[in-house]
Image 1: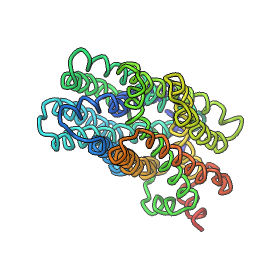
Image 2 (image 1 turned 180 degrees about the vertical axis):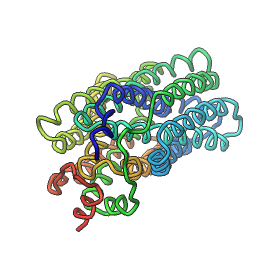
Image 3 (image 1 turned 180 degrees about the horizontal axis):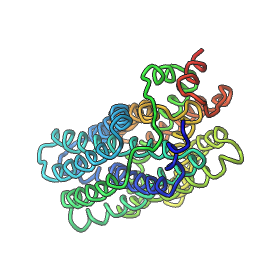
Amino acid sequence: MPETRNTGVDSPRAWLIVVAAFFASFVAFGVSYSFGIFLKPLATEFGVSHAVMSTLFSVLIVLSLFLSPLTGDIADHLGPRPVVAAGALLMGAGLILTARVHYFPLVFLTYGLGAGGAVACVYVPSVAAVGEWFKVRRDIALGIAISGIGCGTLVAAPVAAVLIGHYGWRTSFEIYGVLSAALLLVCAALIAAPPVAKSKVRSGVMAKIRTPAFARLYAGLFFSGVAIFISFVYLPEYAIKDGATQVAAAGLVGYIGASSVVGRLGLNALAPRFGLILVFQVSFVALLASYVFWVGGHTYTSLTWYGIVLGVGYGGIAAMAPAVLAQFFGIEGLGELLGVLLTAFGLAAAAGPPLAGLLIDRTGDLKWPPLLAAASAAGAIVAIIPLRAYGASEPASATESAVATAE
């Protein structure tokens, strides 16, 4: 490929894409992961159970991640800008319409489909664009971009608690709808297709999906996702049961977000020295270790430490997963392949929180969420630890690499 075609790679323009992806992740997941703060007000007003409310969260996450292969593929062909702009409109409309719903099943349409579709349009296209705009500094660029998830979680959850306390959940949704749509439209204006021309080969993507390495990545993300999503849904209520205020309980979600930034940037920075795959595996170990504080402790301090350690592990997993994917399989069709991988998180959201909610409803005991989450974190370790045996290197041709690995 002529050198002139690579003019924008690793350039100042590429770092502007990182800024856009950071704020896109900030908004998309700040809104999504604030769900635990809205859970009790919505459940009280509509008179629904834990299992039903957690299913609403699952619908949001499942739609956002199962639509990701489609939005990633569209962005691969049309560029990320129109897809992110569509996500901005979906997010604003979904939240504002949810604020006006008085019949609970409609919330699955307005909040689940609106916000879920928005996340699908925003996250994978913007993150894949970052991976495609960088070659030398791809790991750190992806780490910075994805740290928007942690920063959004840190800010959005406590702000949601304050807004609900002052204005109620309906007005809070309206405020979030207007602000999120405006910020995402700015992100769409800043983002752009990568400067390097790519060939999209569907058969190459399918060959990668059938490899043992992809299967282990998929299983690891599924089990870790069960552990993570249970935390976002039930940790605030667990803390309130133990005597914390609503704002303090929301702060625990904020701690997860803040420490996840440390995981995304800190662990990512260690990857060049100790190896990307090894540091990626350490993130899963940190995720499992965090449950010592939730399962074994019943004080706000222990829950705080749980949030901090969990956030470091979660941040490392989220930040390095796209880089690991690119290292194994290259950047051709990265948007579509990343979208397929992230459906593992969608399945986790569909399975974890509803199952935990069902156990709570059947037993009346909040001990089940941390126990189920800890067991899932252990399952993630089993899936990820052998990953190094498959090897990882940046291929000259993604299609050739996938075929070779499959063989």
